[in-house]
Image 1 (tube, rainbow, N blue to C red):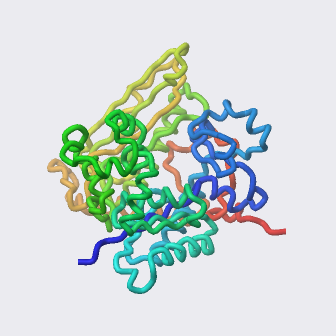
Image 2 (image 1 turned 90 degrees about the vertical axis):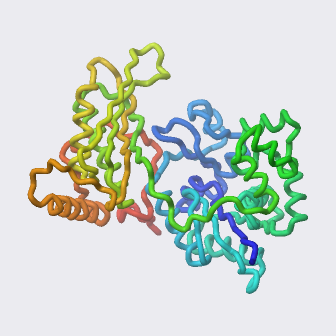
Image 3 (image 1 turned 180 degrees about the horizontal axis):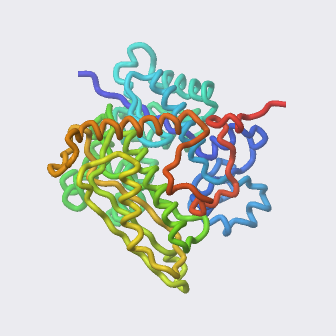
Length: 428
């Protein structure tokens, strides 16, 4: 049987690259992208990394560097990043027989047997060049017989410029040479905390982890680390996922751009979060049987009065109807609310998710045709979703309407270049 071969395609500095793509004037300018409410740095261009800007640093800590080096700052533009990710993944799906989306900017490709037609490295370069030509975003490609080794190959493709962004690690000798140079904490799934424990045992490099006694790794750590070591030795242990597993929970929450005090503003925020969660629920063809709402003040402001509460409810019948979910969320919120606090965050979580076949009808349902009620609800939600996808005249749940005081602070937000007509780039 032919040994499987995987390629990991990873976009370089994805958020920052998306921002630069539509701003040619920033080609060689350091760029950073901030987290929700413009709090911390969550993405950096290669120029910003070269200046020593650290991931996760609060933006107010680097104000002097921003002024000194002319660093361009952007708020997170999730609409733009999501659409650019879709374009990249669509391109990859046209190039490889099977694609497993790993994150917004990473995907595994199944290259098993492709070397009968073209070498793995040549195919990797074709992928890199095609994505850049079609989308305009730079990627690196790591190729190996297991996913963990493919991750390692991608690490080398990014770190060593001489590779040209593509590393073929299907040769066992090349695998061992690279693993001898890679710190153990850089291995997929290890990280700093586990890496520190391994280093205390004398396991400093990826190669030393690969050569470790498997039974000892299982006993002292976990079966997961044992599988990682097996993958480093070329034995695939991570199953291929053609179809992503259904979500077990859906969370929609956000820290507010400014604190909320009035119940009315909290109701608008919770209604919005519940609506967004319901949209995600329908996108996965799922129904929620349980709903949880939470509110809290800012725990990092110790001098201010603190308050935090959550409540949940089991739905009599699993639903994906925004009206039902918003109504239940507001019923949970109102008894929790206390006057006199500055609320910094709220959220809605949907649980006990099932597919349509798993819905259990209410035995006390008074309607003679409950199935028809469900069908009408599904048609109504489908129409609302279709309007919101295609039209600028977005349909809101009534309780969402208002000044949207709960929205995030995004002072440096770039245009939605690819999804809004008014934001299309203009050529003069």
